[in-house]
Length: 303
Image 1 (cartoon, one colour):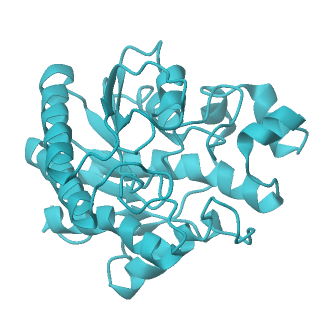
Image 2: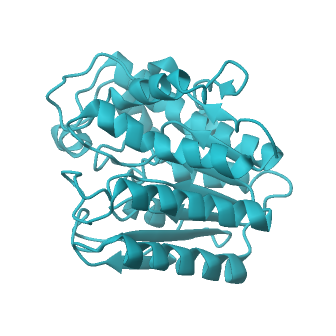
């Protein structure tokens, strides 16, 4: 591989949103701006998704739930679970983002590596939202991939600080999708689902121990499950300063993690599509730069 890796982005990933809200909706646009200023996101390597196909959504999510969300008829409890203010902009970006992860995965199958500058909404369940996640792009993409000729096994390697409970639940009956979640055990969601492999980490874990766990776990799964493609959730809420994190990982540790994961997969010839996952820093510019680490790592391993 040579040159810049494909990167998937849509300008509607960020839209006017209450600035005081805990979810940093502005980060997607800021991330794209950051990468453009550094020459890593260009017209030549930018891909824009369209609205996710209805049958892709309905392979994973309840059709009635989808209708209620799109038409703003969610119940009070459903709105509370979503914990995001409904708007036309929210509907538009929610229906774009899963298609972006599918596109990144398809590009990865062709190029070996691709980055989605959004995604990782791993708390969304079959018929309800959770943890700022409305639709589960990872589960949707796994289902789409497994219906493609040549893709027989999908590994979801989730390094967000929170357990990917929605992904685990949605794929529990799919034997050809393996869900692995490496997360802080004493953190949201407080009632965990059961992934194919859960690695719960203690509060305050530091770089060296964390990197060892990630590397050991990935190599063991590659040896035993032999995936045709990996969907890698490169959450940056493991950062020591993240308000929703509870681990003690430095930015250097995140960079080493991402370089280590992508380097291992590229060396083994296993396609990988990345998503950015969680990150909640109130300093939105610093957060965007942190999310850019996975794209920078992708560029580095391709050179």
